[in-house]
Image 1: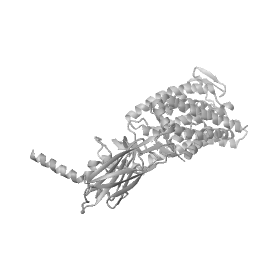
Image 2 (image 1 turned 90 degrees about the vertical axis):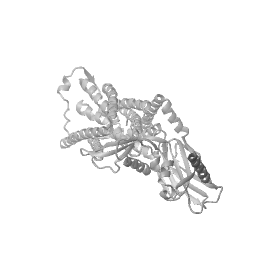
Image 3 (image 1 turned 60 degrees about the vertical axis):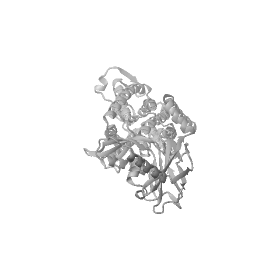
Length: 252
Length: 308
Protein backbone atom coordinates (compact mmCIF):
# COMPACT_ATOMS: atom_id res chain seq x y z
CA UNK A 1 0.00 0.00 0.00
CA UNK A 2 2.77 2.37 0.97
CA UNK A 3 4.76 1.26 -2.02
CA UNK A 4 1.80 1.99 -4.28
CA UNK A 5 1.40 5.41 -2.75
CA UNK A 6 5.08 6.12 -3.27
CA UNK A 7 4.89 5.09 -6.90
CA UNK A 8 1.85 7.29 -7.37
CA UNK A 9 3.65 10.18 -5.72
CA UNK A 10 6.71 9.66 -7.87
CA UNK A 11 4.57 9.56 -10.99
CA UNK A 12 2.78 12.77 -10.03
CA UNK A 13 6.07 14.56 -9.50
CA UNK A 14 7.41 13.25 -12.80
CA UNK A 15 4.35 14.29 -14.76
CA UNK A 16 4.41 17.70 -13.09
CA UNK A 17 8.00 18.01 -14.19
CA UNK A 18 7.07 16.85 -17.67
CA UNK A 19 4.33 19.43 -17.83
CA UNK A 20 6.90 22.15 -17.22
CA UNK A 21 7.27 22.36 -21.00
CA UNK A 22 4.18 22.15 -23.14
CA UNK A 23 3.59 22.58 -26.83
CA UNK A 24 1.36 25.23 -28.35
CA UNK A 25 0.90 24.63 -32.06
CA UNK A 26 -0.90 25.66 -35.19
CA UNK A 27 -1.43 24.37 -38.70
CA UNK A 28 -1.53 26.51 -41.82
CA UNK A 29 -4.81 24.75 -42.71
CA UNK A 30 -7.11 22.29 -41.02
CA UNK A 31 -9.01 21.15 -44.10
CA UNK A 32 -7.92 20.17 -47.59
CA UNK A 33 -10.38 19.98 -50.47
CA UNK A 34 -9.72 17.57 -53.29
CA UNK A 35 -10.93 19.26 -56.44
CA UNK A 36 -10.64 17.97 -60.00
CA UNK A 37 -7.33 19.73 -60.55
CA UNK A 38 -5.90 18.82 -57.13
CA UNK A 39 -2.13 18.60 -57.39
CA UNK A 40 -1.25 17.90 -53.79
CA UNK A 41 -0.86 20.38 -50.99
CA UNK A 42 1.72 21.69 -48.60
CA UNK A 43 0.90 22.23 -44.96
CA UNK A 44 2.90 24.36 -42.61
CA UNK A 45 3.05 23.15 -39.01
CA UNK A 46 4.38 25.64 -36.47
CA UNK A 47 4.29 26.32 -32.78
CA UNK A 48 6.09 27.26 -29.62
CA UNK A 49 7.14 25.65 -26.37
CA UNK A 50 5.49 27.21 -23.35
CA UNK A 51 7.42 26.98 -20.09
CA UNK A 52 6.61 27.50 -16.43
CA UNK A 53 10.27 27.12 -15.44
CA UNK A 54 13.61 27.73 -17.18
CA UNK A 55 14.68 24.83 -19.42
CA UNK A 56 17.04 22.24 -17.90
CA UNK A 57 20.58 23.29 -18.90
CA UNK A 58 22.03 19.78 -19.42
CA UNK A 59 19.73 18.44 -22.14
CA UNK A 60 18.57 19.50 -25.58
CA UNK A 61 14.94 19.89 -26.58
CA UNK A 62 13.82 18.09 -29.73
CA UNK A 63 10.60 18.24 -31.74
CA UNK A 64 9.04 15.50 -33.86
CA UNK A 65 6.10 16.13 -36.18
CA UNK A 66 4.07 13.32 -37.75
CA UNK A 67 1.15 13.41 -40.19
CA UNK A 68 -0.80 10.19 -40.59
CA UNK A 69 -3.44 9.40 -43.22
CA UNK A 70 -6.34 7.02 -42.58
CA UNK A 71 -5.15 3.42 -42.07
CA UNK A 72 -6.28 0.74 -44.50
CA UNK A 73 -5.55 -2.99 -44.76
CA UNK A 74 -3.05 -3.97 -47.45
CA UNK A 75 -1.68 -7.23 -48.86
CA UNK A 76 2.05 -7.44 -49.51
CA UNK A 77 3.02 -10.13 -52.02
CA UNK A 78 6.44 -11.50 -52.85
CA UNK A 79 7.49 -13.04 -56.13
CA UNK A 80 9.80 -16.01 -56.50
CA UNK A 81 10.98 -18.06 -59.43
CA UNK A 82 8.91 -21.19 -60.03
CA UNK A 83 9.36 -23.35 -63.16
CA UNK A 84 11.34 -20.55 -64.79
CA UNK A 85 8.77 -17.79 -64.35
CA UNK A 86 8.28 -15.17 -61.65
CA UNK A 87 5.10 -15.71 -59.71
CA UNK A 88 3.63 -14.42 -56.45
CA UNK A 89 4.47 -17.07 -53.88
CA UNK A 90 4.15 -15.58 -50.39
CA UNK A 91 1.88 -12.86 -49.10
CA UNK A 92 1.07 -11.25 -45.80
CA UNK A 93 -2.01 -9.27 -44.88
CA UNK A 94 -1.22 -6.11 -43.00
CA UNK A 95 -4.18 -5.26 -40.75
CA UNK A 96 -3.74 -1.52 -40.99
CA UNK A 97 -1.10 0.56 -42.71
CA UNK A 98 -1.47 4.34 -42.94
CA UNK A 99 -2.22 5.44 -46.48
CA UNK A 100 0.07 8.42 -45.83
CA UNK A 101 2.71 8.91 -43.17
CA UNK A 102 5.26 11.66 -42.77
CA UNK A 103 7.76 12.04 -39.95
CA UNK A 104 9.93 15.11 -39.50
CA UNK A 105 12.30 15.74 -36.63
CA UNK A 106 14.81 18.34 -35.50
CA UNK A 107 17.74 15.94 -35.63
CA UNK A 108 18.75 12.33 -36.31
CA UNK A 109 15.90 10.09 -35.31
CA UNK A 110 17.85 7.94 -32.79
CA UNK A 111 19.08 11.11 -31.05
CA UNK A 112 15.59 12.47 -30.74
CA UNK A 113 13.68 9.52 -29.34
CA UNK A 114 14.55 6.19 -27.75
CA UNK A 115 13.44 2.93 -29.34
CA UNK A 116 11.16 2.14 -26.37
CA UNK A 117 9.48 5.51 -26.49
CA UNK A 118 9.11 5.20 -30.27
CA UNK A 119 7.33 1.85 -29.83
CA UNK A 120 5.08 3.24 -27.11
CA UNK A 121 4.02 6.34 -29.04
CA UNK A 122 4.15 4.71 -32.51
CA UNK A 123 6.17 7.53 -34.01
CA UNK A 124 8.42 6.06 -36.72
CA UNK A 125 6.99 4.61 -39.95
CA UNK A 126 7.39 0.87 -39.16
CA UNK A 127 5.71 1.25 -35.76
CA UNK A 128 2.70 2.90 -37.40
CA UNK A 129 2.06 -0.25 -39.45
CA UNK A 130 0.06 -2.88 -37.61
CA UNK A 131 0.53 -6.47 -38.74
CA UNK A 132 -0.11 -9.31 -36.35
CA UNK A 133 -0.67 -13.03 -36.64
CA UNK A 134 0.78 -13.69 -40.06
CA UNK A 135 2.31 -17.09 -40.57
CA UNK A 136 5.17 -16.07 -42.84
CA UNK A 137 8.53 -16.33 -41.08
CA UNK A 138 10.27 -13.20 -42.34
CA UNK A 139 7.43 -10.76 -41.80
CA UNK A 140 9.90 -7.89 -41.33
CA UNK A 141 11.12 -8.04 -44.91
CA UNK A 142 7.49 -7.65 -46.09
CA UNK A 143 7.00 -4.62 -43.84
CA UNK A 144 10.28 -3.14 -45.10
CA UNK A 145 9.09 -3.69 -48.68
CA UNK A 146 5.79 -1.94 -47.91
CA UNK A 147 7.67 1.06 -46.50
CA UNK A 148 10.08 1.04 -49.47
CA UNK A 149 7.30 0.99 -52.08
CA UNK A 150 5.26 3.71 -50.38
CA UNK A 151 8.35 5.84 -49.79
CA UNK A 152 9.10 5.65 -53.50
CA UNK A 153 5.56 6.98 -54.16
CA UNK A 154 6.12 9.86 -51.70
CA UNK A 155 3.35 8.46 -49.51
CA UNK A 156 5.77 7.74 -46.70
CA UNK A 157 8.24 10.47 -45.85
CA UNK A 158 11.00 10.30 -43.29
CA UNK A 159 12.77 13.64 -42.92
CA UNK A 160 15.36 13.84 -40.20
CA UNK A 161 16.34 17.43 -39.48
CA UNK A 162 13.37 18.94 -41.35
CA UNK A 163 11.96 20.64 -38.24
CA UNK A 164 13.55 23.99 -37.45
CA UNK A 165 13.74 24.87 -33.75
CA UNK A 166 14.75 28.44 -32.81
CA UNK A 167 16.01 29.40 -29.35
CA UNK A 168 14.64 26.13 -27.92
CA UNK A 169 11.21 27.73 -28.25
CA UNK A 170 9.85 28.32 -31.76
CA UNK A 171 9.59 25.49 -34.26
CA UNK A 172 8.19 25.00 -37.73
CA UNK A 173 8.20 22.50 -40.56
CA UNK A 174 6.30 21.95 -43.77
CA UNK A 175 4.97 18.65 -45.03
CA UNK A 176 4.04 18.01 -48.61
CA UNK A 177 0.93 15.96 -49.23
CA UNK A 178 1.08 14.28 -52.66
CA UNK A 179 -1.78 14.40 -55.18
CA UNK A 180 -2.84 10.77 -54.72
CA UNK A 181 -4.40 11.31 -51.30
CA UNK A 182 -7.10 9.18 -49.78
CA UNK A 183 -10.07 10.92 -48.13
CA UNK A 184 -10.27 11.03 -44.36
CA UNK A 185 -8.87 12.58 -41.23
CA UNK A 186 -5.12 13.13 -41.24
CA UNK A 187 -3.86 13.07 -37.67
CA UNK A 188 -1.07 15.53 -37.01
CA UNK A 189 1.01 14.92 -33.89
CA UNK A 190 3.77 17.01 -32.36
CA UNK A 191 6.11 15.53 -29.73
CA UNK A 192 8.54 17.39 -27.50
CA UNK A 193 11.38 15.17 -26.33
CA UNK A 194 14.30 15.48 -23.93
CA UNK A 195 16.92 12.75 -23.60
CA UNK A 196 14.87 10.56 -25.90
CA UNK A 197 11.77 10.70 -23.68
CA UNK A 198 8.52 12.34 -24.78
CA UNK A 199 7.71 15.19 -22.40
CA UNK A 200 4.65 16.55 -24.16
CA UNK A 201 2.49 15.72 -27.14
CA UNK A 202 -0.14 17.56 -29.13
CA UNK A 203 -2.57 16.21 -31.70
CA UNK A 204 -4.89 17.79 -34.24
CA UNK A 205 -6.50 16.45 -37.36
CA UNK A 206 -6.70 17.80 -40.87
CA UNK A 207 -9.78 16.82 -42.85
CA UNK A 208 -9.15 15.80 -46.43
CA UNK A 209 -12.33 15.65 -48.49
CA UNK A 210 -13.39 15.48 -52.09
CA UNK A 211 -15.57 18.43 -53.10
CA UNK A 212 -17.75 19.44 -56.03
CA UNK A 213 -17.77 17.10 -59.02
CA UNK A 214 -15.39 14.68 -57.32
CA UNK A 215 -17.76 14.39 -54.34
CA UNK A 216 -20.81 13.96 -56.55
CA UNK A 217 -19.29 11.21 -58.69
CA UNK A 218 -17.92 9.34 -55.69
CA UNK A 219 -21.27 9.44 -53.86
CA UNK A 220 -23.25 8.40 -56.92
CA UNK A 221 -20.90 5.46 -57.57
CA UNK A 222 -21.37 4.16 -54.04
CA UNK A 223 -24.99 5.05 -53.32
CA UNK A 224 -26.62 4.47 -56.72
CA UNK A 225 -24.26 2.00 -58.43
CA UNK A 226 -26.77 0.88 -61.06
CA UNK A 227 -27.65 4.44 -62.05
CA UNK A 228 -23.95 5.25 -62.08
CA UNK A 229 -23.19 2.27 -64.34
CA UNK A 230 -26.01 3.18 -66.73
CA UNK A 231 -24.88 6.82 -66.77
CA UNK A 232 -21.32 5.70 -67.58
CA UNK A 233 -22.63 3.59 -70.46
CA UNK A 234 -24.82 6.43 -71.70
CA UNK A 235 -21.83 8.79 -71.73
CA UNK A 236 -19.81 6.18 -73.63
CA UNK A 237 -22.54 5.61 -76.24
CA UNK A 238 -23.17 9.36 -76.63
CA UNK A 239 -19.46 10.08 -77.05
CA UNK A 240 -19.13 7.29 -79.61
CA UNK A 241 -22.11 8.61 -81.58
CA UNK A 242 -20.93 12.22 -81.36
CA UNK A 243 -17.47 11.40 -82.68
CA UNK A 244 -19.01 9.44 -85.53
CA UNK A 245 -21.43 12.29 -86.38
CA UNK A 246 -18.69 14.92 -86.25
CA UNK A 247 -16.44 12.92 -88.55
CA UNK A 248 -19.25 12.34 -91.02
CA UNK A 249 -19.98 16.06 -91.04
CA UNK A 250 -16.29 16.87 -91.57
CA UNK A 251 -16.18 14.56 -94.56
CA UNK A 252 -19.11 16.50 -95.97
CA UNK B 1 -2.58 19.28 -66.67
CA UNK B 2 -3.11 17.02 -63.65
CA UNK B 3 -6.58 15.61 -62.98
CA UNK B 4 -7.64 13.89 -59.77
CA UNK B 5 -9.66 10.73 -60.47
CA UNK B 6 -12.48 10.38 -57.89
CA UNK B 7 -12.73 6.57 -57.85
CA UNK B 8 -9.13 5.61 -58.58
CA UNK B 9 -8.01 8.25 -56.02
CA UNK B 10 -4.90 9.13 -57.95
CA UNK B 11 -3.85 12.21 -59.84
CA UNK B 12 -2.79 11.76 -63.47
CA UNK B 13 -1.95 13.87 -66.49
CA UNK B 14 -5.08 14.50 -68.59
CA UNK B 15 -3.18 14.81 -71.89
CA UNK B 16 -1.42 11.51 -71.29
CA UNK B 17 -4.81 9.81 -70.92
CA UNK B 18 -6.21 11.56 -74.02
CA UNK B 19 -3.16 10.43 -76.01
CA UNK B 20 -3.34 6.84 -74.82
CA UNK B 21 -7.07 6.77 -75.61
CA UNK B 22 -6.38 8.13 -79.09
CA UNK B 23 -3.67 5.61 -79.99
CA UNK B 24 -5.65 2.65 -78.73
CA UNK B 25 -8.75 4.04 -80.49
CA UNK B 26 -6.94 4.12 -83.87
CA UNK B 27 -5.95 0.45 -83.43
CA UNK B 28 -9.49 -0.38 -82.38
CA UNK B 29 -11.02 1.17 -85.48
CA UNK B 30 -8.45 -0.41 -87.79
CA UNK B 31 -8.53 -3.94 -86.51
CA UNK B 32 -11.89 -4.33 -84.79
CA UNK B 33 -10.26 -5.13 -81.50
CA UNK B 34 -11.53 -3.31 -78.43
CA UNK B 35 -7.97 -2.43 -77.47
CA UNK B 36 -8.42 -3.59 -73.89
CA UNK B 37 -5.49 -5.97 -74.09
CA UNK B 38 -3.27 -2.96 -74.80
CA UNK B 39 -4.93 -0.30 -72.65
CA UNK B 40 -5.37 -2.28 -69.43
CA UNK B 41 -1.62 -3.00 -69.01
CA UNK B 42 -0.86 0.64 -69.97
CA UNK B 43 -3.19 1.89 -67.23
CA UNK B 44 -1.49 -0.38 -64.67
CA UNK B 45 1.78 1.12 -65.80
CA UNK B 46 0.75 4.74 -65.17
CA UNK B 47 -0.42 3.84 -61.66
CA UNK B 48 -4.17 3.27 -61.92
CA UNK B 49 -5.21 0.54 -59.43
CA UNK B 50 -5.78 -2.71 -61.42
CA UNK B 51 -9.42 -3.16 -60.35
CA UNK B 52 -10.29 0.37 -61.52
CA UNK B 53 -8.28 -0.04 -64.73
CA UNK B 54 -10.08 -3.25 -65.74
CA UNK B 55 -13.58 -1.90 -64.98
CA UNK B 56 -13.07 1.53 -66.54
CA UNK B 57 -11.44 0.04 -69.60
CA UNK B 58 -14.60 -1.97 -70.24
CA UNK B 59 -16.57 1.30 -70.20
CA UNK B 60 -14.16 2.99 -72.58
CA UNK B 61 -14.29 0.06 -75.02
CA UNK B 62 -18.08 0.54 -75.24
CA UNK B 63 -17.50 4.07 -76.52
CA UNK B 64 -14.76 3.33 -79.06
CA UNK B 65 -16.56 0.22 -80.33
CA UNK B 66 -19.83 2.14 -80.73
CA UNK B 67 -18.06 4.89 -82.63
CA UNK B 68 -16.32 2.30 -84.82
CA UNK B 69 -19.48 0.29 -85.44
CA UNK B 70 -21.33 3.37 -86.72
CA UNK B 71 -18.58 3.94 -89.28
CA UNK B 72 -18.80 0.30 -90.32
CA UNK B 73 -22.61 0.29 -90.42
CA UNK B 74 -22.59 3.10 -92.97
CA UNK B 75 -20.27 1.06 -95.17
CA UNK B 76 -22.52 -1.98 -94.60
CA UNK B 77 -19.65 -4.03 -93.27
CA UNK B 78 -21.45 -5.32 -90.19
CA UNK B 79 -23.10 -8.74 -90.27
CA UNK B 80 -25.83 -8.02 -87.70
CA UNK B 81 -27.19 -11.54 -87.87
CA UNK B 82 -23.80 -13.15 -87.26
CA UNK B 83 -23.08 -10.56 -84.56
CA UNK B 84 -26.28 -11.46 -82.72
CA UNK B 85 -25.51 -15.20 -82.84
CA UNK B 86 -21.97 -14.55 -81.55
CA UNK B 87 -23.38 -12.27 -78.86
CA UNK B 88 -25.79 -14.90 -77.54
CA UNK B 89 -22.88 -17.31 -77.10
CA UNK B 90 -20.72 -14.47 -75.75
CA UNK B 91 -23.08 -13.43 -72.96
CA UNK B 92 -23.51 -17.02 -71.77
CA UNK B 93 -19.73 -17.46 -71.89
CA UNK B 94 -19.14 -14.20 -70.01
CA UNK B 95 -21.54 -15.20 -67.25
CA UNK B 96 -19.71 -18.54 -66.85
CA UNK B 97 -16.33 -16.78 -67.13
CA UNK B 98 -17.20 -14.50 -64.19
CA UNK B 99 -17.87 -17.61 -62.10
CA UNK B 100 -14.57 -19.23 -63.18
CA UNK B 101 -12.77 -15.99 -62.32
CA UNK B 102 -14.35 -15.91 -58.86
CA UNK B 103 -13.37 -19.56 -58.26
CA UNK B 104 -9.79 -18.91 -59.38
CA UNK B 105 -9.42 -15.89 -57.13
CA UNK B 106 -10.59 -17.98 -54.19
CA UNK B 107 -7.75 -20.44 -54.89
CA UNK B 108 -5.33 -17.53 -55.38
CA UNK B 109 -2.92 -17.04 -58.27
CA UNK B 110 -5.60 -15.54 -60.50
CA UNK B 111 -3.11 -12.86 -61.53
CA UNK B 112 -0.66 -15.44 -62.84
CA UNK B 113 -3.40 -17.34 -64.65
CA UNK B 114 -4.57 -14.18 -66.39
CA UNK B 115 -1.01 -13.40 -67.48
CA UNK B 116 -0.34 -16.93 -68.66
CA UNK B 117 -3.56 -17.06 -70.64
CA UNK B 118 -2.59 -13.74 -72.26
CA UNK B 119 0.81 -15.11 -73.25
CA UNK B 120 -0.58 -18.41 -74.53
CA UNK B 121 -3.51 -16.97 -76.49
CA UNK B 122 -1.71 -13.93 -77.85
CA UNK B 123 1.25 -16.13 -78.80
CA UNK B 124 -0.77 -18.77 -80.65
CA UNK B 125 -3.10 -16.34 -82.41
CA UNK B 126 -0.33 -13.89 -83.26
CA UNK B 127 1.98 -16.47 -84.81
CA UNK B 128 -0.75 -18.27 -86.76
CA UNK B 129 -2.05 -15.01 -88.15
CA UNK B 130 1.42 -13.70 -88.95
CA UNK B 131 2.43 -16.82 -90.90
CA UNK B 132 -0.86 -16.96 -92.77
CA UNK B 133 -0.98 -13.29 -93.74
CA UNK B 134 2.68 -13.15 -94.82
CA UNK B 135 1.97 -16.13 -97.06
CA UNK B 136 -1.09 -14.38 -98.47
CA UNK B 137 0.92 -11.22 -99.20
CA UNK B 138 3.63 -13.25 -100.97
CA UNK B 139 1.00 -15.06 -103.01
CA UNK B 140 -0.63 -11.83 -104.17
CA UNK B 141 2.77 -10.30 -105.02
CA UNK B 142 3.83 -13.32 -107.04
CA UNK B 143 0.59 -13.34 -108.99
CA UNK B 144 -1.28 -10.05 -108.57
CA UNK B 145 -4.17 -11.00 -110.87
CA UNK B 146 -4.97 -14.25 -109.13
CA UNK B 147 -8.28 -14.33 -107.32
CA UNK B 148 -7.68 -15.47 -103.73
CA UNK B 149 -8.85 -19.02 -103.34
CA UNK B 150 -12.00 -19.25 -101.24
CA UNK B 151 -10.98 -20.53 -97.82
CA UNK B 152 -14.11 -22.51 -97.19
CA UNK B 153 -13.74 -25.48 -94.94
CA UNK B 154 -15.80 -28.31 -96.34
CA UNK B 155 -15.24 -30.56 -93.35
CA UNK B 156 -17.25 -31.24 -90.25
CA UNK B 157 -18.32 -27.63 -89.80
CA UNK B 158 -20.55 -27.85 -92.85
CA UNK B 159 -22.05 -31.14 -91.77
CA UNK B 160 -23.61 -29.59 -88.66
CA UNK B 161 -27.37 -28.97 -88.41
CA UNK B 162 -29.29 -25.67 -87.77
CA UNK B 163 -27.94 -23.94 -90.85
CA UNK B 164 -28.55 -20.24 -91.25
CA UNK B 165 -27.88 -17.86 -94.10
CA UNK B 166 -25.56 -14.93 -93.25
CA UNK B 167 -25.97 -12.71 -96.32
CA UNK B 168 -23.50 -9.99 -95.42
CA UNK B 169 -20.77 -12.56 -94.85
CA UNK B 170 -21.86 -14.66 -97.83
CA UNK B 171 -22.05 -17.76 -95.64
CA UNK B 172 -24.56 -20.55 -95.24
CA UNK B 173 -23.39 -22.42 -92.15
CA UNK B 174 -24.69 -23.97 -88.98
CA UNK B 175 -25.24 -21.62 -86.03
CA UNK B 176 -23.31 -24.02 -83.75
CA UNK B 177 -19.75 -22.87 -84.68
CA UNK B 178 -20.48 -19.13 -84.19
CA UNK B 179 -22.29 -19.89 -80.93
CA UNK B 180 -19.27 -21.88 -79.71
CA UNK B 181 -16.83 -19.16 -80.81
CA UNK B 182 -18.91 -16.53 -79.01
CA UNK B 183 -19.11 -18.71 -75.93
CA UNK B 184 -15.35 -19.32 -75.64
CA UNK B 185 -14.51 -15.70 -76.37
CA UNK B 186 -17.03 -14.68 -73.71
CA UNK B 187 -15.29 -16.89 -71.14
CA UNK B 188 -11.88 -15.52 -72.09
CA UNK B 189 -13.14 -11.94 -72.06
CA UNK B 190 -14.48 -12.30 -68.53
CA UNK B 191 -11.33 -13.99 -67.23
CA UNK B 192 -8.87 -11.70 -68.97
CA UNK B 193 -10.88 -8.52 -68.46
CA UNK B 194 -10.98 -7.49 -72.13
CA UNK B 195 -13.54 -7.32 -74.93
CA UNK B 196 -12.01 -10.34 -76.63
CA UNK B 197 -11.71 -8.82 -80.11
CA UNK B 198 -8.17 -10.10 -80.56
CA UNK B 199 -9.47 -13.66 -80.18
CA UNK B 200 -12.76 -13.04 -81.96
CA UNK B 201 -11.31 -11.50 -85.13
CA UNK B 202 -8.99 -14.42 -86.03
CA UNK B 203 -11.66 -16.94 -84.99
CA UNK B 204 -14.14 -15.34 -87.39
CA UNK B 205 -11.61 -15.30 -90.22
CA UNK B 206 -10.09 -18.72 -89.79
CA UNK B 207 -12.78 -20.81 -88.11
CA UNK B 208 -15.95 -19.33 -89.60
CA UNK B 209 -14.40 -18.25 -92.90
CA UNK B 210 -15.89 -14.75 -92.84
CA UNK B 211 -14.49 -12.06 -95.17
CA UNK B 212 -11.99 -9.80 -93.34
CA UNK B 213 -13.86 -6.57 -94.20
CA UNK B 214 -17.04 -7.80 -92.48
CA UNK B 215 -15.18 -9.30 -89.52
CA UNK B 216 -14.05 -5.98 -88.04
CA UNK B 217 -17.48 -4.34 -87.86
CA UNK B 218 -19.17 -7.51 -86.65
CA UNK B 219 -16.59 -8.00 -83.92
CA UNK B 220 -17.05 -4.40 -82.74
CA UNK B 221 -20.84 -4.87 -82.75
CA UNK B 222 -20.76 -7.76 -80.29
CA UNK B 223 -17.95 -6.21 -78.18
CA UNK B 224 -20.23 -3.25 -77.36
CA UNK B 225 -22.69 -5.56 -75.61
CA UNK B 226 -20.16 -7.81 -73.88
CA UNK B 227 -18.20 -4.86 -72.44
CA UNK B 228 -21.39 -2.93 -71.62
CA UNK B 229 -22.49 -5.94 -69.56
CA UNK B 230 -19.06 -6.05 -67.88
CA UNK B 231 -19.21 -2.31 -67.05
CA UNK B 232 -22.55 -2.71 -65.28
CA UNK B 233 -21.28 -5.77 -63.37
CA UNK B 234 -18.16 -3.91 -62.19
CA UNK B 235 -20.09 -0.73 -61.31
CA UNK B 236 -22.65 -2.55 -59.19
CA UNK B 237 -20.44 -5.13 -57.48
CA UNK B 238 -16.98 -3.55 -57.11
CA UNK B 239 -17.72 0.24 -57.49
CA UNK B 240 -14.58 0.46 -59.60
CA UNK B 241 -15.75 2.29 -62.74
CA UNK B 242 -14.10 5.73 -62.75
CA UNK B 243 -16.25 8.06 -64.81
CA UNK B 244 -13.64 10.81 -65.08
CA UNK B 245 -10.98 8.36 -66.25
CA UNK B 246 -13.45 6.80 -68.70
CA UNK B 247 -14.41 10.18 -70.20
CA UNK B 248 -10.77 11.17 -70.73
CA UNK B 249 -9.94 7.84 -72.34
CA UNK B 250 -13.02 7.75 -74.51
CA UNK B 251 -12.70 11.29 -75.86
CA UNK B 252 -9.34 10.22 -77.29
CA UNK B 253 -10.68 6.77 -78.09
CA UNK B 254 -13.73 7.70 -80.15
CA UNK B 255 -11.78 10.16 -82.28
CA UNK B 256 -9.05 7.55 -82.75
CA UNK B 257 -11.57 4.89 -83.71
CA UNK B 258 -12.97 7.09 -86.49
CA UNK B 259 -9.49 7.71 -87.87
CA UNK B 260 -8.65 4.04 -87.53
CA UNK B 261 -11.75 2.89 -89.38
CA UNK B 262 -10.76 5.15 -92.30
CA UNK B 263 -7.14 3.97 -92.34
CA UNK B 264 -8.48 0.42 -92.38
CA UNK B 265 -10.28 1.07 -95.68
CA UNK B 266 -7.05 1.93 -97.47
CA UNK B 267 -5.22 -1.16 -96.28
CA UNK B 268 -5.48 -4.55 -97.90
CA UNK B 269 -6.94 -7.34 -95.82
CA UNK B 270 -3.61 -9.20 -95.66
CA UNK B 271 -1.75 -6.06 -94.59
CA UNK B 272 -4.35 -5.43 -91.89
CA UNK B 273 -3.91 -8.97 -90.62
CA UNK B 274 -0.11 -8.86 -90.62
CA UNK B 275 -0.14 -5.59 -88.66
CA UNK B 276 -2.57 -6.97 -86.11
CA UNK B 277 -0.41 -10.12 -85.83
CA UNK B 278 2.72 -8.03 -85.14
CA UNK B 279 0.90 -6.01 -82.49
CA UNK B 280 -0.48 -9.12 -80.79
CA UNK B 281 2.99 -10.73 -80.80
CA UNK B 282 4.58 -7.58 -79.35
CA UNK B 283 2.19 -7.53 -76.39
CA UNK B 284 2.70 -11.28 -75.93
CA UNK B 285 6.49 -10.80 -75.96
CA UNK B 286 6.30 -8.03 -73.36
CA UNK B 287 4.15 -10.13 -71.03
CA UNK B 288 6.37 -13.20 -71.47
CA UNK B 289 9.44 -11.05 -70.79
CA UNK B 290 7.90 -9.81 -67.52
CA UNK B 291 7.27 -13.38 -66.42
CA UNK B 292 10.77 -14.60 -67.28
CA UNK B 293 13.01 -11.73 -66.16
CA UNK B 294 13.63 -11.05 -62.49
CA UNK B 295 11.54 -8.02 -61.52
CA UNK B 296 13.25 -4.96 -60.02
CA UNK B 297 10.89 -5.02 -57.05
CA UNK B 298 10.01 -8.52 -55.84
CA UNK B 299 7.23 -7.23 -53.61
CA UNK B 300 3.94 -5.73 -54.65
CA UNK B 301 1.00 -4.19 -52.78
CA UNK B 302 -2.60 -5.19 -53.20
CA UNK B 303 -5.99 -4.74 -51.59
CA UNK B 304 -6.99 -7.78 -49.56
CA UNK B 305 -10.10 -9.57 -50.74
CA UNK B 306 -10.37 -7.71 -54.06
CA UNK B 307 -11.23 -9.77 -57.11
CA UNK B 308 -8.47 -8.30 -59.27
